[in-house]
Image (cartoon, rainbow, N blue to C red; front, side, top):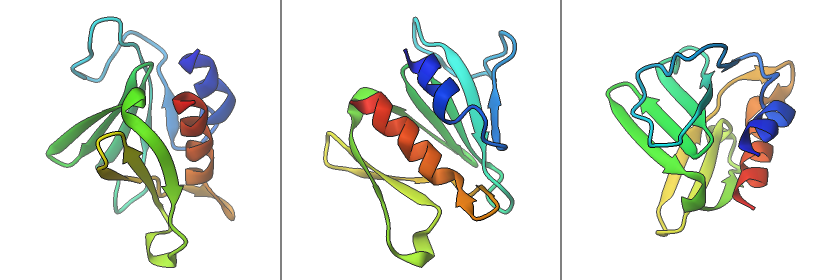
Length: 124
């Protein structure tokens, strides 16, 4: 199910690479977790990578890694503040807020809107 949602929503983003082989980029995957692709942010945030799996997101920010399961996400929110224009706020079931950077765009369309569309379909 998640694989087909990836295919319909974020697969065609220029900065999203779909997995073409068994390489899991040395992710510490859980049992039955399948690596589907990676979103690579634009410079200067090119070290901020988002690995998409069938269970959740593995977020790599320089030396800090986080795993966010789709089942742990209560909702998403996009800031109306122009300063935070590239961030998606993930409101977690624990009450915490995780700021997810999606800084790519194609012309005037920002990738974050397609990524939110993906997340909203996955967390329903």
